[in-house]
Length: 158
Image 1: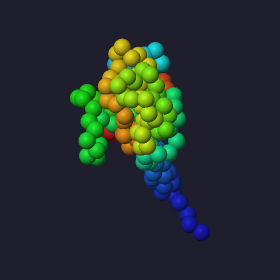
Image 2 (image 1 turned 180 degrees about the horizontal axis):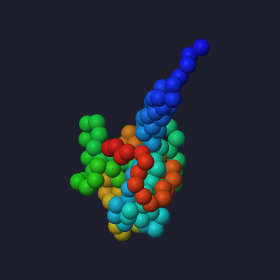
Image 3 (image 1 turned 120 degrees about the vertical axis):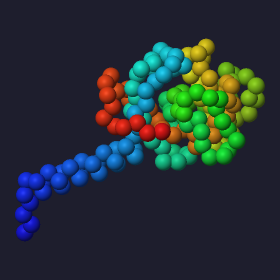
């Protein structure tokens, strides 16, 4: 039988908590909203818990709010300046007809491996109306819920 001292138990519990936090940080990210592009649903300063995506494909649904990375592998797609991550709503998925709000993208379906995204406040949003079809791998997380104001428990990572 193994006997643990109080100090040993504290070390074991601390290690388990640290391992749990690492797993949570790999699965989730905390994002703070900046700007007006998602008003009225989200306002500048809102904090969001987002579930990280493990790769292209997966469970993205029309209407979901997603986190998009501005930089990525050399796919020739680069958003103009601004933050490294942006928050938008999925407007159309691969195979969907291109909605009329996206003038100039044609009338065919959204191509495989791409989506269209739109800010909730179009007058103050850069989105697929300017960017065109967004490669699916740029969607790095799906917003799960809004967090209460205050300091983050989960450290922010790009």
